[in-house]
Length: 253
Image 1 (spheres, rainbow, N blue to C red):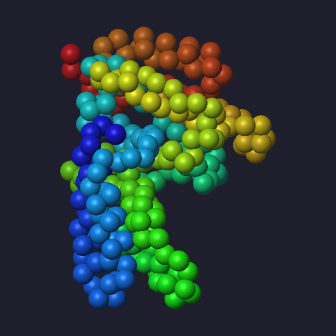
Image 2 (cartoon, rainbow, N blue to C red; image 1 turned 120 degrees about the vertical axis):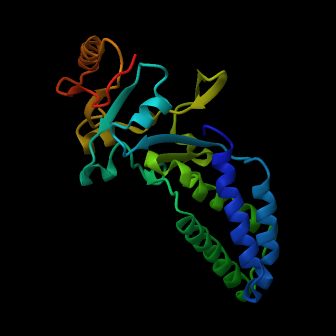
């Protein structure tokens, strides 16, 4: 994440929804689970989430300014076709692309659905005389809600039209290893989705190459030289027919 606010935006809303649900009489027996889950969410997340971000905003001045350091932005545009629902970006149950939610009403509805699901199963266990470990229920509820709000973001960022892939640490066994890179004075851990593209994946999709529709070179000086260099790079990697075009956003030196 770019900052902790992205986590705590969802956390604050989850605690608000939990408090409202816990005050209802029909949730009396589930109230301890709810309050314990809220306490767990108040702490720094104990689980690791790996997040990859995309945008539906293809050629935005705000995006170039926000995510291209200086004047060297390059945007990879991927195909968006129904057949790709089971390809490089959707490998169930490990990862699936989800639109980031900016609308607070939709966030609350999603959280309420998650809480209702756990409450219903909890009541079923009680009715069947099963032993109920409230601490375990609280941990599972907090964990599931945290996964939900990994796609929550403050409405001030709605113009970004962000789409996220989120992988939880419980799925790390599907990847070869955790790698590291340096960014903004931090050492950032990351994983490679290419680890998932095995022989059966290639047989099903016909290739392990990413479905790149085009590459856009952002506003910069000597744009044509950069375009030529990107074309050469793509050809060297086996992407021979990918258009490389310039951004429609004008460059200001």
